[in-house]
Amino acid sequence: MQWCFMLISRILLLRRNEIFLFVTEVRKPCLKGLRSSVATAAGVDVPDKMKSRIPVVLLACGSFNPITNMHLRLFEVARDHLHQTGMYQVIGGIISPVSDNYRKKDLAPAHHRVAMVRLALQTSDWIRADPWESEQAQWMETVKVLRHHHKELLRPLSQEEGPDQGRAVSPVPAAVPELKLLCGADVLKTFQTPDLWKDEHIQEIVEKFGLVCVSRAGHDPQGCISGSPILQRYQHNIHLVREPVRNEISATYVRRALGQGQSVKYLLPDAVISYIKHHNLYSRDDSWNGSSTRTNEGETS
Amino acid sequence: MENSEKTEVVLLACGSFNPVTNMHLRLFELARDYVNRTGKYKVIKGIISPVGDAYKKKGLISAHHRVVMAQLATKNSSWVEVDTWESLQKEWMETAKVLRHHQEKLEASSCDHQPDSPVLEMPGRKRKWAEHRSEFSQERSPEPKRKAVPKVKLLCGADLLESFGVPNLWKSEDIAKIVGDYGLICITRAGSDAQKFIYESDVLWQHQANIHLVNEWITNDISSTKIRRALRRGQSIRYLVPDLVQEYIEKHNLYSSESEERNVGVILAPLQRYVVDTNSNTTA
Image (cartoon, rainbow over all chains, first blue to last red; front, side, top):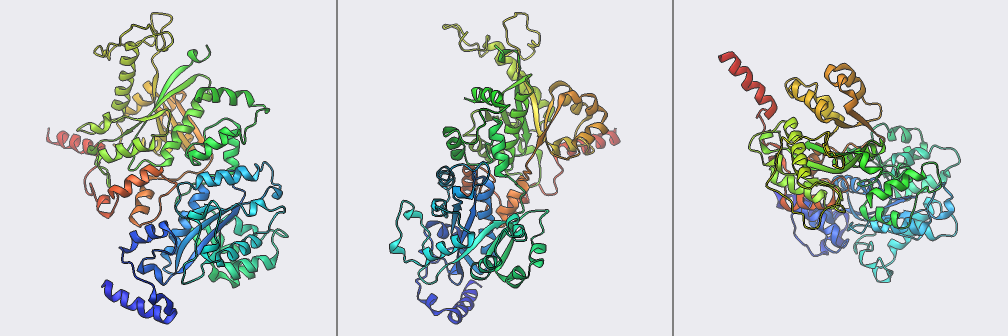
């Protein structure tokens, strides 16, 4: 059975791209191998089942103020979905916090937000933080962030440098990965907000890159697509993913809870919580509930 | 001392924990914040008590693994711990009995080391572990300096509260005991029917002062059932359970279609009791 399947897939490979035939084969049990090989170093140890697939890197843009487990879940759910299509192999994920010039209310300094993302990703073997966007002097439109990272992916592996090198997303030798924007359904909805996005930017995102949109119950992503001629035209480049587990950890809620001295444990990684406490981020010392905050801190320490 | 006037509370969560998820752990955090904020109580401990294998729930894997996972999950918690007593019982234990066990344990240990505060403890004083007298009740302690025994309260989600309405699942006297003698901290979703459920039950309504409904403002729907389903389908459960739990599950390959078939066709222990009861009634 398996041989039969392999033979067919080989014929398909031949028709698609003959380069794949020359890649040395590493045989592994498919599903297990899928995880571990994506895990180790992208593209180095690709199991048979994955060889015919289009490599994908997922990029998430946002405030990450602070990063929560829900942001991390988006990546996991999106990767599972793309793998299940049988067409893609997700070889990496990038989290790109927005710069301070975004001027959103209560936005913690970018270096803190980047540091928190790094801490949250300490235990991930496929997602990494990228500070480029956060270091820009001006606010960057998402499409420009996509262009930047796409250019980076085209660069050969040898030129990669920096502290993240060991875990850096490396292109599969055989094919250039596709870069797709990962977002929640709320972002898809903002495409409809007048003047928030330029039409040509929306078009470039869905035409040149692609969108992976994780939605939850109550959202109508299909409706958003139907309501927009651009999105409708490039529908094949928009992947709608359903998160079966509702777990809506909004960063706004987390900040509020922190300000009130309430526990946020298990909503964000422990390392991030320690960082927030240590740097006294999101606290409201001078507010009306400042005294209650202090008592709670005394109790837990 | 402001704190010494507050009643100390131990939160007990009973359930399958098959496996323990971040949602279970969140219940404790939400409950502690709420209870401490009342100003009347102070939570000193949380206990996770996984049910024994005799519960016979579909897909229930061995208590040993469920206990280990709960222990791994609470490794980084400074106040929640796992208790194996219930899980080690040969027969299924009613929740009211588990509550009683833990209340008695607290009473026994509190007469062992009185006064409670380590600062006040005499240097040469020895703890008499042998003298566990469970009948020693001391709500109104004779000595003024003595601290009251902490109170065990049952921590649960709205689903447990609503299961009180499932026929034959609970003995009505047990429900009365749980809400009357101990008390309930119930985490509910905003807009849930918990309030209505209490109103519609005479016994719950009567003890409503002992039922604390805590609102959970963010929807947290990480059920163990969904975790097991995701695992069967080879999907990621990352960030839904603690990393150590995920690693343990993978290492021991705990959940599969086979494990989900465990206890299929077996009647759940509490309902079995009812079947036995009616049989003996009809034969008698």
